[in-house]
Length: 256
Image (cartoon, rainbow, N blue to C red; front, side, top):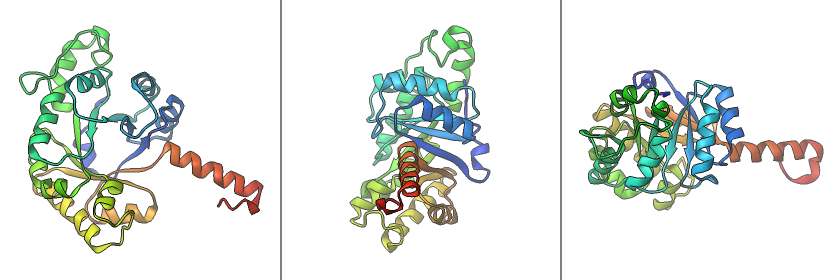
């Protein structure tokens, strides 16, 4: 099992990227690039469980740890995904301490939670490391709660205070849309929301993170105390690469 050292996460930028193409090739390339972690997106991504399995295999030889974003909160889904052996789970749009507690319960085996265990899963080394996994999983699984709404903002500190939640992770697209300032990083209210989430995490000794799309956004978030960051996505990076290539070949194409 490839766990994330939770203390290492606190040292500088914990650098990740977003994998939403459902592609094992993208995952392997991200691992080869040397990211600390990669988010495999099952909410807005193109992949399914079969693709997730192969993405995890593709990341396995690299130092890059995998976090999986689930599309919804469901006991069977949590068990199925965690049995495949990612280092943790990201949950979208968490809006209350009650929701955060449910996430913790579903992600942990008894007595800390309600997740079922099995000996022959990938996470357990198909039986070879089952006892080690039982001893390590509850302590080492990383749980990221996304703040993506006004309700989530209001409950941010209570969510961060939930034992077992490690990171508050801002979903800037959904949050800015709900605040009616889509993609406006310079909006005062949106910037205040980012400060609020960072302070809530800091007050509870937790980390905070976000998806960033430019160097200027890295500077903004890091200045506010965000250090668990993902830069771009495989689909986005591929699109930019293709349009840049086309612009080089055909400057009058309008793609720059």
